[in-house]
Image (tube, rainbow, N blue to C red; front, side, top):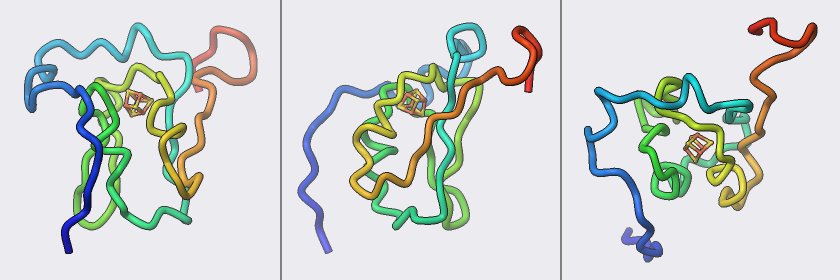
Length: 94
Ligand code: SF4
């Protein structure tokens, strides 16, 4: 089955591996919910290549994710929830 997906700008594969930026930018991060139907649209829309398919699941490469929320916005199944990076006492890493 061939899917017609829009062409979107994205990082060249492997171009960000040595320069992870998500650690300093991110204030929220995506969590893939159980309702995910593995359409893989999020892996195409993520501008940083932070979402990849591994062993039948979508996996987040935390060091690459900037927390922009594009993946959650583009998910047609609403199967991605953005969670605050920090919780509880301000400044305490979860
Ligand atoms: S929040 Fe942004 S950078 Fe992080 S996985 Fe989603 S689209 Fe990629």
